[in-house]
Amino acid sequence: MDNQLNEKNLSNALTLNLKPFQDNFWHSLKRYPAMISGWGSGKTLFAILRGMDLSQEIPENLGLFVRKEYTDLRDSTIKDFEKYTGLRLDANKEVRFPNGSMIMFRHGAELDVLKNINLGWFCIEQAEEFESEEQFEFLRGRLRRAKVKFHTGFIIANANGQNWIWKLWISNPKEEFEVFTATTFDNADNLPKDFIEDLKRMELEAPEQYRRFVLNDFSVSDDQFLIIKSRWFEELKKVIFPSHSAKKIVACDPSLGGDECVIYVMENSKIIDEKILHENNTMIIAGEILAFLRKYEINDVAIDIIGIGKGIADRLQEWKINITEIDSAEKAEQQDLFYNKRAEIWFYTSQQIINKNIEYPIDEELRRQLSNVRYKVLDSNGKIKLEPKQDTKERLGRSPDRADAFVYGLWGLKNVTEFNPYQQTNIDFDKVFSGGRAGY
Image (cartoon, rainbow, N blue to C red; front, side, top):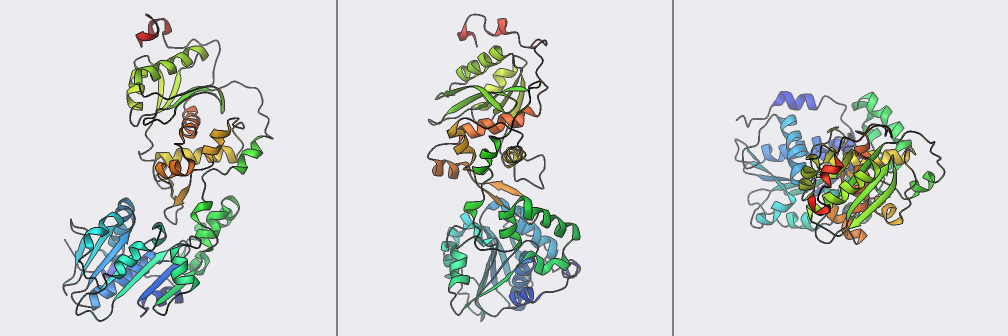
């Protein structure tokens, strides 16, 4: 394992026109400097450079890089560090230097075990992901490493409304706090031309994202990042859908713990029948789905297979039904754009609504659930991740089961051929229902 700095990698990373805000953050002598700036402004690179200088120039120093979520720490922070420096972390997520210094990498849930550690420096990457200054203040209290004359804690972040970062560094900063802000365009000559051109389109297509992540606008916060906005539904009222051959599917979001088990029959984007159960018996749920398939002569089902859904899907497959199995935690088809399948499916629905490809949902509760799911952007490529479902549930006062069933149905319809009333279903319903409903 080579723990010596790879000068070639670092020099390649620095083949750019260094901007004053980057240089000043990198070499700031303040105790708590921050770079709050737009996409592509070099936040991560210059945080790494600052950490490397502190570790290489000060013997026996101890530094710490922090990210809120483990997956983001692993897939982004650590990968960027290894790419820029050529160093490789050991099994403990640490890098050691010949002068006795060490850099540790930890995520939010691991901070509690650092109560007795004495740091020389720390860096919080994407600091706006933390809801409060609690973690910053905790690490601030760890800046007490002996024989280290310069102690510093620094953050890099995107603007996110008037949050704790805004209060500490923007609104009324104390003497030891220093902030460097910039838009994406302040570093434009170091960025690909097609990236800059795409931002111009983004200004029209996603104005909130553009203002926050490109213009570094502090007036835009996470609260404005709804994957589907309620006002979009009003536009759907004006759309007239011509009569044409239909695609049909049964969509189901099974649930446990008192939540709704939702079964929709969808013809194109329109819900033509439904059943809302409070049931977790896989055989009963499978039976209700089969009843809908028989009634409407449908061969296709879209179902969430996490939890009891897998058992229902397995039961339905015994009858040669076409199943679109949806595991919301699995990798997205477009992994560069979406954190997981759940984000991809919801974004697909939002685009269908924006493009007016679906009919106005009559159910007010369904519309409420659809327009209450938030997302965040993980990186400068615009990669999308939805908030945890529990957060949506707490805000709504209930689980968004109707919305989930609806988006599953729209996603599954992509795999459905147009309905032909003269084509026989491939399901032998006489066999399925032989012996009555108890025969499922």
